[in-house]
Length: 252
Image (cartoon, rainbow, N blue to C red):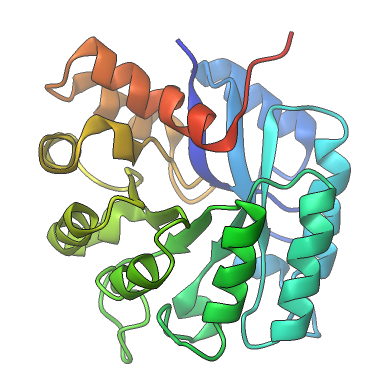
């Protein structure tokens, strides 16, 4: 069974919580039977220029050493030209997706001016976008429902709702039922929430994620293992869906 953690964060020493080295990260993966991780820069690695250029460069170097690290380029959409160029550069370096964090960077995911040009490039380059969602905040930046606007406007762009909306999981499931290009990430959701997502949306559009280092893979994996789903559905969620989405294969 292929296991891919679809939502993690990784940065160099002094840029975030452990693991800070590829050796430490590999140890965590091996202990939990994880074949590969999708990873991106954490907010703690943002530069003084408000870009993630240095953190993305760190990941690019790590990816040269192992195919078990699957990089998603993190960008600040407010700095649009930088974001567009970072995506082009990182695509050429082997990155396979993009990470948006509407709450950290304070923007609406359906903003036509700052988000749509980036989404257009993502669709052109066939790069899925992982979007942080969660509890309501002052301006609603983290709510999952507006992802539907982006999904509607860019039907060929795959969008991953991070954390399945957290306590707004019903909203996340609802919007995923409306749009076939929306995928749900299981991190921080209960096994019952995961069962409901699979029953309502389909196992082919649910992916396992732990949110390392903020989540614990042992706990997040256990939720998938104890969920009342078939073994075929379990295989899909734990790794097959992400492998197919990113065209990734295990290499010895």
